[in-house]
Structure formats: structure tokens, C-alpha cells
Image (cartoon, one colour):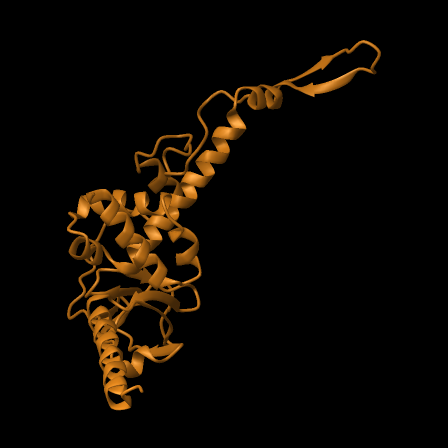
Length: 262
């Protein structure tokens, strides 16, 4: 006959044992979340405002509508800063973390000058005379005004009429044919994949912050980019990060770190 009291005591011990493991894991593993929000002010431009996670080092800026997304975890300190607003500091408490979308109201920063001195200059008021005395080269080209321009030799696409026996005369794009035979398109495809990985690498570092990687994986700041890029190339981080599966992303980083040190 089963000793019910002893059996329940064993089940209770197992339950509390696993609960303790989960508690320790949750304390050592940062629980990142994507904080989505909006900066609100009717008097100033709300685009390009800096949103900085002082704790992790991650950062982003608001779009033209004042909307932003940034990676945060509990007790992170968020700084909202720009030349046109008064800085705001927000600490990520439970109440803030539980919100799916937040609106942050900011105050306009007005810089008042005590004294303004207007000095005379050498301009006469006659536009033609002032332009003649301005030492500007004539004619003005794109280098003078800082506009990019093409300086090389322009090349046209190479097409040649090639007759084929038994077929009507047709036009063949020799340039496209050469690129296909030389492997240009294959290299272009690989380059586009590489570019996407580089973009994801930058996004991941900005989201989690440089400090997170240096502390968690014993890296210097110069090693962070190479570490993140290597992890992306050898795991599903790129797709998991896009889907905001931060638990899987951090798990992949841990596996990559262990594989590098084995």
C-alpha cells in the first residue's frame, strides 16, 4: 500500500525544487522586452528624439510621428533627450513594463540669450557687387556647394546584334550574359545576404546594448560586433529577433558563446 503522506511529501519537494531552479534562472537571465511608445508635444518636432537605455547602452531615435521601440528590462533607466526638449528620465518599474504602448509627454526647452550683439560686415547691399567680392569661383560646380556628382566616364550598356543560323537576327545583352557566366549574380546574392546580416547585427546591438554583451560574454567593446555577427551567421537569431522572440535570441547567444570557448 502506498504511503500517501510520504508520497505527497516527495511530490511537494520536487515541485519546490523545480520552482527554485526557475526562480534562480529568472534572476540570472535578463528578461528583455520591446518597449513601444510615443513622444508627445504640440510645440516642437517630435522626430529624431534620442531614446537611450542608460543601463544596457541600447539606443534609438523617434520617427517622424514620434514613435520609437527599444529593448528594456526591469529597473532599466531610460533617458529621453534632444536639443528641443527638457530631458526626461524613466525607470522601468513593473507598471511601466506591463504596458503594451506608452505615451511620454515632454516639455519644450527654451534657451534664452541675455545679450545679442549685431556687428557690421563688408556687405554693401548690392547683390552683384557682393557676389563679385565674395571670392567665389565662377562657374560654380557641384564641388563648390558640396553636392555629389559623377566624375567618371559614362558607359552605356553593351548590346550586339548576333546572327544565329536558322534564326532571325536578335539583340543579345552581352553585359548581362557576361555577368551571368562570370558568377556576378551569385556574388551579388551572397552580398545581399551579408548586407542583411550586417543590418541585423547593428539592430541587435542597439536593442540589447553594448554593455549587455560586454558583461554577459566577457567581451571588449571592439569584440561585440564580431561576436554578434558570428552568432547570427550560425543560428536563427535573425528570424527570432524579427519576431521578438528574445528568449530564443539570448539562448542562441549563450550556445554560440559556449561553442567558442570549447
